[in-house]
Amino acid sequence: MRVLLNETQLLDGVRQLAAKIDEHYQGRPLTVVAVMTGSVVLFADLIRMLSMPLRVGVIQASSYRGGVKAGELAVDTDMLLDLQGRDVLLVDDIFDTGRTLERLTKIVQDRGAQSVQSAMLLRKQRTHDVPIRPDFVAFEIPDEFVVGYGLDYRDMYRNLPYLAILDEDEIARTSETHAAAKPIDPQAVASGNG
Ligand SMILES: O=P(O)(O)OC[C@H]1O[C@H](OP(=O)(O)OP(=O)(O)O)[C@H](O)[C@@H]1O
Ligand SMILES: Nc1nc2[nH]cnc2c(=O)[nH]1
Figure 1 (tube, rainbow, N blue to C red):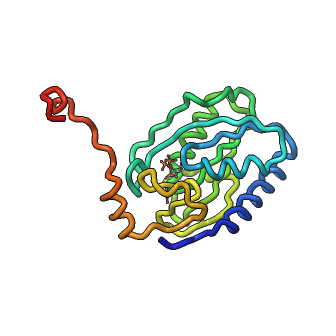
Figure 2: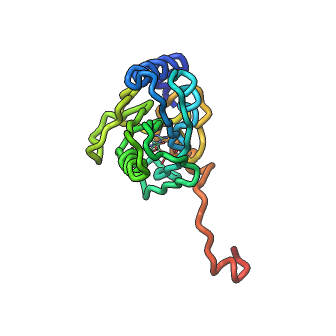
């Protein structure tokens, strides 16, 4: 594992991100929506640095389940609060293909938000799959799979206080020790072999 950003660098980046957001909204009330689960650490740090009146909401989006490549995007809006007429800021850890942000921006617009912007800790230096771009970004990073400060590989590493690049051999090792859950075979369960 190679450390890309240490704890101090991350907090400095989040502080600068908060300053840009504060400057943009000029004290106007804001609804901040955490894109779970990856934004959990960033979100906790960021909202304590913002100075406008805040409402806090949550949405869940997941497409990297068990791997380093995006699969089908699943979104859960059950915990999303009312957004009608609100200025909304989506907060996420990373902008990679861009598909998550594109889908969530549409969902927020469809719920009647007055404006939708986005803040990301990281943006990968790569060609993105979508025309949309985040409005506020703390760090540009190389096109490598990163973990820590909320980002996972197979649900591990989110608690690391730093951001690190996961090497190929660590990816292989974690795959063995934390195999992704296999779907249940209903026939095997019915026959008692499940
Ligand atoms: O730009 P994209 O290619 O769409 O990737 C970005 C998304 O990928 C990660 O979520 P993930 O699907 O891993 O779920 P998680 O937040 O539960 O870790 C991350 O938290 C972003 O939401
Ligand atoms: N953990 C992790 N999740 C991602 N989702 C999209 N890109 C990444 C990445 O580099 N690391």
